[in-house]
Each structure stands twice: as structure tokens, then as C-alpha cells.
Image: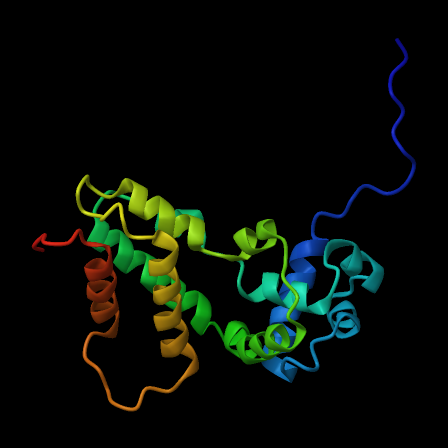
Length: 197
């Protein structure tokens, strides 16, 4: 049996993705959302624009993946201690949204999505969302600590709203222990009715 021949051409450059994503984050901070175009990313990263378009169909997709890539599964690995896991998750989520590139991109991305009305395939949102990690935390919780009637997606959406509000809007009053207050709120939403704790 003849050995299968390899297609001619250069081997795939595995650094292209990270170079383009890093350049995107740098441009967002240095020049802002509107100036972070595919052409600007290509010039800044040294990656040809056609290589970027092969990986991301638009600058919006590139910016979303560069700034909101979900949370590292290692940073939110569930331990079974619901309070501790929710606290670690919220801190990791706040850190992701508070990063300079994320802050620079957030308003522009929100405005774009409101104007376009276009929806993305579910697999795209799973790639940039921390929703699966939050659901893993709930699955690892001790039996009886999460009300089975509570929709985890609703709780996640409320948590996301709290994180976005904290990172995008300046806080007028100084609030003591903001992370703990958010943890308490989420645990109250999850707790079965009539349980103490």
C-alpha cells in the first residue's frame, strides 16, 4: 500500500490565532473598538488579513473571541463546596470582564448586537461563554443545596447582569464586600424553598 502523500505547501502556523487575538486586545486598549478592524489587526500582528478571515468571518467575531473567551476551566474547577465555587467563579468572571480589552470592547459589542439583530449558532456562544462552567459548579454541589425547580440559565443570566453592572457602570455608593454580596444573592436564588443556610 503506497504511503499517502502530503499536500504541498507550508505547514499550518499554529501561532496565527494567538498573534491575531493578542493584537486585537492591544488595539482595543490603544485605539478603541472602532479602530480595531481586521486590517489593523493584520498590520499589528503581522498576520495576513486573509488568514484572519479564514479563522473569523468578521471583526466582531474576532473581538468577541479575543475579549470574552469564557473562563479557564481550571480557574473554576468545581470542588463541591457551593459557596466557595460560586465565589471563585464570580471573581474569575469579574476579572475577565474587568480586563482593559474587555472593557474597551463591551459597549461596542452590545451596540453592534442590538443593531444587527443577528443570532449566532449556539456553539459560538458556548465557546465564549462561562455558562457551561457555572452549570458544572451546580452539578457538583451537595445534594439538596440547589433547588431542582430553579433554571440554572436564569440564575446565570442574573449573575451575568450583576457582573456586567459592576464592571461597566461606575458604582455610586461604596458597597462593602461586593463579591460576597453577589455570592449571597446567587445562593439565595439557588436554595430550595424553606431551607436554611
